[in-house]
Image (cartoon, rainbow, N blue to C red; front, side, top):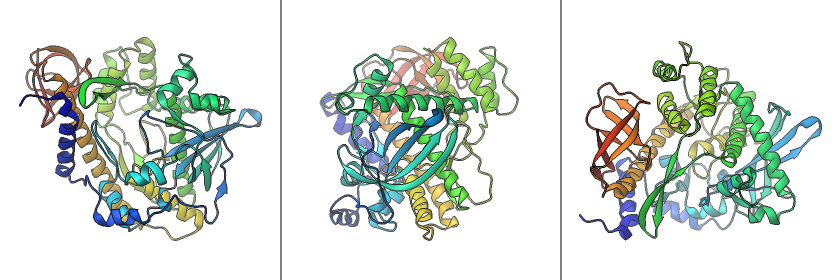
Length: 488
């Protein structure tokens, strides 16, 4: 079938819906959920013990096109070089009650699914991009992680509570990063909000200290290239590399800190929690062999601090190729999962972040594990019975891990379908590539330019993750999301 470029978006949307159904994810909300939605007249109002923090210089920083705003941040200098950082997280539970039809849809999918052509939100957009979103110039109810850090980035104290907040500026990663790096002007909303520029610079400074502290403890400095599908009208016209920047790093570091104090709070109350864990990598031997290629000897057993030292060295020596090394390490370290931490047990922690206490609590508009954590936290703050039993939490942890994996496969399939459309007229061309996966099912490679991943069907003997090779494109099937290469 001949491609009609202006039909690319509709074609990819159809593929995405089919992939959702194939992976047992629900692309649409039930009539019962939509009926419940119609009965929600406005955002949650302040009831009970809710502080009023609307006077602070709250701002959101997210992707340019994000509309489901989960968190706001603000900072304040304290005596002795200390810094107070507050992270406000949307109180989704205030409008989406446990056991409702809306909650049922969120429980089933457990996550929003982001594909190039269409988003399948975990919650209806009336909620996730409006009534439960921390939108600019709007008052909202949030759960606040209030943290005080020493000058060197170590946590001194923390507190959790509910509060009213007001977003003064909806900002985007790219423009904020360019301004902080000195390569672009301050975003218009920063210029128009007195004091916000100084506040964001303070946030950036303490975020860098937090990152430095984590990396000293072995948190991994990884920088992979994410490919974003570019549309011109409804036609796929390119793939754009989306790299990490200082604004993304700022938010990432604050979210890691907030997730950490949330998990620690529940543990201090001797309550169960849902943790995000990344166990020691099973393929450490291969990681060590990759390091040997650069003349570095890693310990025989998994050692996050030693791996981080190696990564830091390589970033300094060859920053241009560092994302390719990062991709190799990411593939070998493996994927995270959800697990229940019961009072008195020793949590497995997160190998990549080098932290023991870590939950997912900062994105409840788009991730159901965060809603679970929010409900546990709110129950603890109110002294109310917990909303889930230990057995229910264990079942939900396994379910969330399974559905997250399904959602990831949908997103990857549709990205590959978009890439196949883009490459459909380049059959027979040769490309430089890096091996990203070797399993019993096959070998996968990712091209350096454009950043497209596909299956290597010939000449795979002796190849392993991280090896570089030259490949020839032999087929691109957009309907199935298949891109096939042979070794050139």
